[in-house]
View: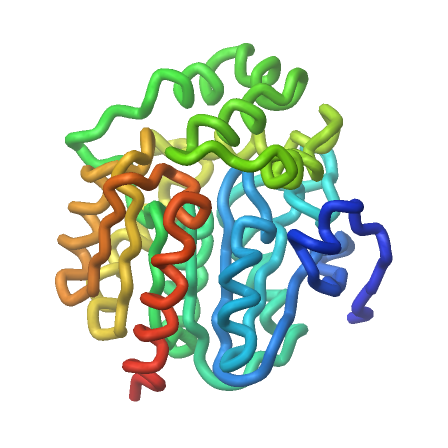
Length: 305
């Protein structure tokens, strides 16, 4: 497949996002990906409604010793944004996309998965499909299992998932992205950083993927992604043999202590660091503390036989 390198970067990127990304054709759509550095591979998977910009400082900090790959999921960031009639916005399709991308990039050796939000579900579904390709796990406020029994889906997500308000809040007005840029952090973002998060989602047609992410949250049997999540959840204990690092913002209004407890149940050997003054966008609140922890973790676990 052809790698499409396009100079269509917004002005803020030159300082905040100083990368030359490429576009890979995946099942007829262009997926934007950062591919920086050399060495063993660290694959960074973002969630909703962020994009590879979320990982910008980790990419800069790790690319000197590692090959860092950070794609934008289809419908997100700088990737193509097809409508719901042109693309199946489901978890299984996203895992297919990721597998195709990794195949194109000719990744050698095993992969360290670094995952946030929906990235955890996508990444661990990929890992369940290709367990032999995974070396280490790094988890940041994410999940790869059903909603914990002790946790209720927040009312705001329920409204966006199950009622016509979802289209209004997420796609039509963009309130979802703009509000999260304020609610998902404990420290106020610089205006230019906030604008960077919002930049790929300026128009309603840019936000279809964000809406479909929320609508794809599996809550009960029969939901499109429910069975796949069940399969991944059943296989999670086998990954306890891998070196795992959990980095958790304690003031996340969705992925809270209920989710952290589930991870510790599935991966009891994981190394855990909690940040009491960090929210869902944990890298914005605690990135300066997190980077050296990741560097140390990777150095202490250079390979897992």
